[in-house]
Image (cartoon, rainbow, N blue to C red; front, side, top):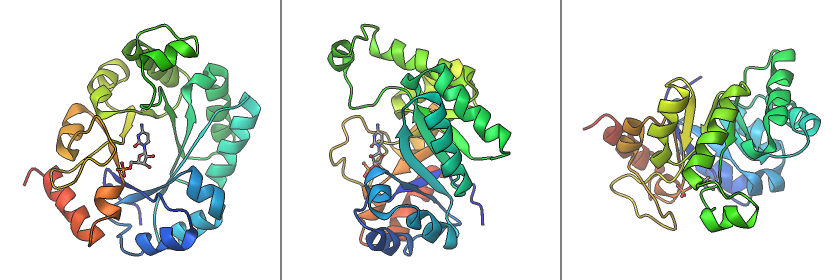
Length: 233
Ligand code: C5P
């Protein structure tokens, strides 16, 4: 039951039960779901099985960063569990990213592999403190290009970066963007937000949305409102 929706709902919950309680209110024909570090660390692969069993495609957001062989093996393990998308840190370097791509190819695994360029929590002085003195936007560009050259399918980026990355890496290169706030929703702790419509216009291919849907009184009503915004109505 694959969906062509650009929406990925972040299941940021501390337990399998809480995550499934939310998933059961969503329609796998109209969105995908994201499983992050907290949920996966607590629930293990059981959460993937449960979500797949309900028909969801899953983005496993574990942001692997290690030596090439270890990352390749972790990516293979994720793909063999049937996840739709998995990610690594681009700053792990070209050899690490290429090893992961090659491992998927060797095993005929079709999972989408994307990379985080620079965490949006990092600012210029944080980069400088770890020895990166390149301006932040330039560093994002460099890592996006390295990701593409390494054969990955796309990047996680802020919607503010989507147009720039589209110009640099092309339309087909995936741009998966969090920090999305529909016009009806509160910003919460997100600083640089964009509406779903504006993000897609800017070149994002997929939108990661958490609280505007998961904390709504009726999550499917919120999802429908986002779909309506996307269609321009
Ligand atoms: O609730 P909200 O829509 O803010 O959730 C956004 C999701 O995207 C969370 O899972 C958050 O960890 C993730 N994320 C983010 N900003 C990034 C990278 C990931 O908000 N730069």
